[in-house]
Length: 387
Image 1 (cartoon, helix red, strand yellow):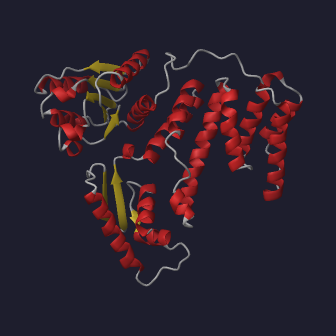
Image 2 (cartoon, rainbow, N blue to C red):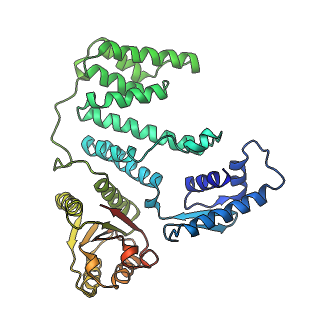
């Protein structure tokens, strides 16, 4: 149990130094730490390092280091589901704020698809009640509400009713979830059910907090009673993605990484690993098609050459033309046909790119570390997507 708890706490604070005192508080939250608590923690840390070593986890992916005043679990952020969720949720929220509900719904659906239950479910069943776990669950609920909002704006009120009913059943005093469910039910022709949702919310808020529903929910309630025509969905525009393509979590992740590159002004490498037909071809086609419609992004297709020389030359040429103000996406295919120079070529460009928003997209038959041992050490800020 100690190993699971310490690992979970470090994962919740990945790439941050966690003080020894905080870890001890996480293990013994009631202040009942035994006299041997520090020794128990040291043994647990040592055991976790052994687990990582036996699992042959590359240091680029995860490594547990001692750093005053405690420990830090260094991880490639994109290998952690929680980090991927936050990335996608932020992108979806941004699309919703920008008036792009179709894009928002697609990305938020992918973010929610990463969840398999409450955060730290096994720990919670053992009595662990950390505020950090509650914060993660709250972030999921917020993303779910954003998703419901995006679906309603896209005219898909029927499709989202079940999701919102489950959300309000889990948290009956959550006003935004109830408000979205009321609107979805009313648009689906269930006025009486929508009004019952309001009444349940009012009762829970009164009994649990001695409060009344907020102004927005009360106004919606009155508008439903009045059958206000403005509650009906507006005529829907064409898919705001511009191409009406099918939803795909891998494609969503690639666009989320591009958003990360733009926001952090830092290069990143994405490798599509697997069969070079089918999935890879579709992903590249969709990616480049959408990017060519975005005149704020430059797309380059690189040569590789049998020894990687052409790849290095093209990467350096692309970097010379890149600017901090215009994101650059470079694509190089079938890297499994290139010799062992690939990690050095790509790593050199990534390390010297500085604050250029550069996304390098590679395709290969297998993961880079399999094709070129040492890839993770040579190429920082890298993500592999198996397709």
